[in-house]
Image: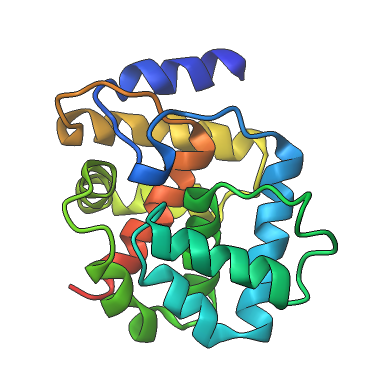
Length: 189
């Protein structure tokens, strides 16, 4: 599977990540799971705060400030000083929860307005239009599974014609987050 992750990075040459995640990070499985648990807790305790965060540009000072407030005041993080969350993955997890929970129609307009002109999200929007079934297959796959990696690899073919000119690498985890955000944004169209 390591080979497939590498190929995804190469096949999607020209990909960029949102301002908060300009280069692919080697996010550990533990951080991915903690980020997902944090997103589930926020969405469960304060859906309005989850919607508000999805309406902010990922990695912007406002996003970072709101994320830190949620980390310290939500009761969702045992030790906020030790918590590490990648903003793109957090937004992606919140978008997935909104899609699964039937909240997409209410959240989509705010999510669509966030991150204007972001090349990574524009690429994901394009890939979702080109291969919606592949995008949905990726989100249907269990996190951190072979099926997730395989679906990310398969979707990479739809990314090539959508990729911006400047090459950057994204991870399968980031691709999943971008696809979730793109599917959520598609609900506003």
